Amino acid sequence: MPQLKVPGLLLNILLLSVLMTCNRPLYADEILVAVASNFSGVIKKLSDAFEAKTEHKVILSPGSTGKHYAQIINGAPFDVFFSADAERPLKLEVEGMTVPGSRFTYAIGKLVLWSPQQGYVDAEGRVLEQSDFRHLSIANPRHAPYGRAAEQVLRARGLWNGLKGKFVRGENISQAFRFVKSGNAELGFVAASQVNRPGQGIEGSMWDVPQALYTPVRQQAVLLRDSEATRAFLAYVKGHDALKIIRDYGYDTP
Amino acid sequence: MFNESDLTALAITLKLAALTTVILLLVGTPLAWWLSRTRCRLKFLFEAIVALPLVLPPTVLGFYLLVAFSPNGPVGVLMQAVGGPPLAFTFTGLVIGSVIYSMPFVVQPLQDAFSAVGRRPLEVAATLRASPLDRFFTVAIPLARPGFLTAAVLGFAHTLGEFGVVLMIGGNIPGETQVVSIAIYDHVEGLEYSHAHWLSGGLLLMSFLMLIAVYALNRRFRLMRS
Image 1 (cartoon, rainbow over the protein chains, first blue to last red):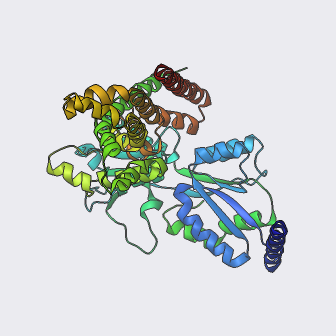
Image 2: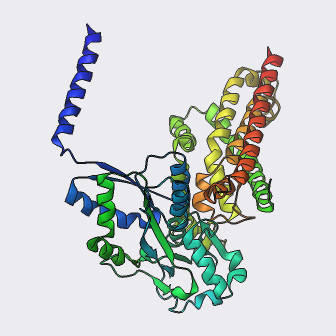
């Protein structure tokens, strides 16, 4: 009878999955991480190292912090949230969505003015005053922290109003970077971590924006669900090895 | 309710949808006519190309356009050669993207309508010594009228809802490339949920009314015919 075959198959699958689960160490756990897209390259490296050490599995969901925030307050099943700013984690903490006392700064983002063309951006950013470019790419200052930092820099230099007509705005810093990288915008304010690839020289030309011109982008993380695995992961991210990797990618660490 | 930049975004969106629809009707009519008449063995290939935007994620289309528009991309190089301006982050660029993106929504209803007309009325017109052009304009087009209505409204409505392509090649410039769907996205990202509600509700209502109009009119055409 063909009907009998289906339960048989189901039973096999069930047995197989039970066997597979038994094969893994009992303490192995999956950690679902929402991470700001500017940090996704670094966290990949961190989670690879962490997985090699502990048998836990880290699943990454890179995206914009605003979207992650909206998803978390609407019940998304993330265990840890690496935000692109300090504001959203604080908000979640105030709303009682986090594990109390878990909020910490994991990286401090630095802003650079960058162009993929050699010699296009000078070391003082004077290229902004010459303004013979068509498009200056920035992250949207209304909700992206790196966009806000870019606005502060341009206002401090008295260039904000003059350059307004040349802005193209990425929904987050990754898109702002993509606009420049693809050559559609000549230059843009991007995160230092995007142009600093460890072990490779910096492509193109850039102005390392002095930190006096903007409020440093403090990127904070919070724990949303408490477990041995999530605590172990955060402890690893705060550890020596991790901090070195984070700095290698062009961030400051607290 | 609506602030000034919302209204600007609304105006840009309507302008984009209207222009895209006009261009698609002009380009799509001969294409749909050809597809409905041809005995070319490669017809299936052209039909598949026209239908591609239906199944491709808009981000794929947007990504290819971003690469093509860049100074080293094929379109960018061509534009430089003819002394034209770059297309990324411009309204013109969005029109090009929308024409591709909404193409199947215009071409397919037109092709169906032309096929439904059949050969018979045109053959009759031919025996009455109507020239091919005459047959097309005075027989085929009037008989395919419901198809034109559906094509125009679907093309327009689909362009209203465009997001992924604009996000990739628009650069979110108010008054140039910031359309309603992007403005809504910004409001949500910035936690301005009440603004997002107003714009979303407006878009929902507008799209719904347009679809109602199509289906109601199509019903009347059918009744008239039977």
